[in-house]
Length: 146
Image (cartoon, rainbow, N blue to C red; front, side, top):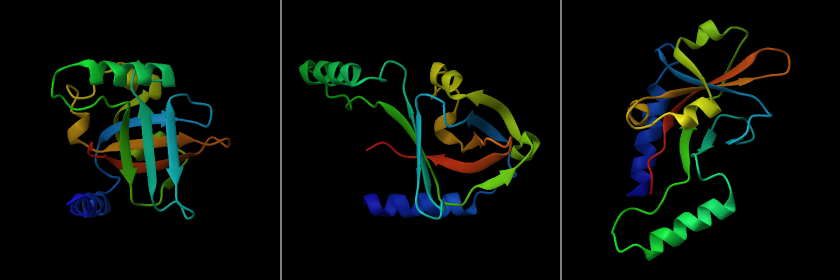
């Protein structure tokens, strides 16, 4: 069943263009609390942003311990917000091409309430600033939690 969801997600991503207005997250190589990994030809890229209060192993261990001690049947704690892009990034020299409704830093995104802002229902554009001033631009979808 998990494979079906991933195939559906990849199909949605592949039909989603860069021309729609979206929230954009801008980062560079020195930005904290975001990890991104690509395959060899960068046609698939995943983005992971650490949630506030979940930055260190000690904080994560404490959250897991509290979850195990609780008698509730809630879902286990999540430490990251994860996005996935199944297309190669576009290269641009202007943020106007991203058609962003708003441009957020990773830190600002982490301080916002993700769900109430509708991030879970929309695509996100990731903009990586390069040393030459250009940007790599990925249109990514929120990955479902397991």
